[in-house]
Structure formats: C-alpha cells, structure tokens
Length: 144
Image (cartoon, rainbow, N blue to C red; front, side, top):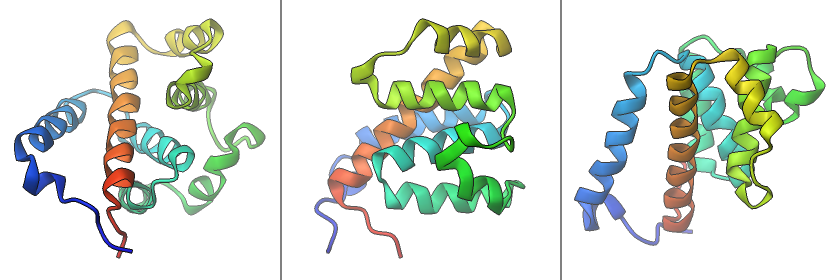
C-alpha cells in the first residue's frame, strides 16, 4: 500500500492552516495528557494508524502509562481515568460520531469540570484531530 497524495506538497497553504490549529491548541492551558487522550480516542474510533502511532508515542513521552493507553478503548469499564477525563472522552466520542449528535448531558458534564474557554479548546482539539484523521486516512499516510 502506498500513499495516494502528498497533501503538504500539493496544497502547502491548506496544510499550514491545519498546523495553525495545532499551534493554537499548544497555547491552551489544557493538560497535555488530556489532549493526547482526545487525539488517541478519536483516532481509535476513526481507525487512523498514523495518528495512533504518533499520539501514543507523544503520550508516553509526557508521562502517560502503557496501561491507560491499552485500556483507552474501554475507558468506561475502568477506574484508571478520572471523572473529568471520562467526561472529555465521552464528548470526544460524541463529536467524532457526530451523526448521533452531542447529548446535552455529555456537554453539561464537561462544562461542570471546565470553564467556557476550556470547553471551546476541548471542542477544537476534538475537531482538529478528526480533521487530521480524515486527511491521513484519505491520503493513506503510512506508518513506518
């Protein structure tokens, strides 16, 4: 299997715009591990091997444990994630699977842990990783 298209080469301005979202997110006050959990969970749902590989490596570098990474797909069934993290993971799933819409209860749970600016940053992080997943999957960006 080989890459279909090299989007950064063909459309560098569009790719730089996507990097603008990453730069914005890197300036947020959100916990970097929480951001990696968002990226990992959306990438699991979307089946993006490239992003899973990248973000599992990034998460480990900043202190995320192997056990939590292994159990992320079953986060509802473990006590390894805090209630705050579980709220964000639920929102991540609902935004990623948007055809089911985001439940008011899910949104309110996140809003109970974070201020309005942080909620906006969390939503932007979820939207951004979903966009990256779609680019990598469509272009068939390979791991390794």
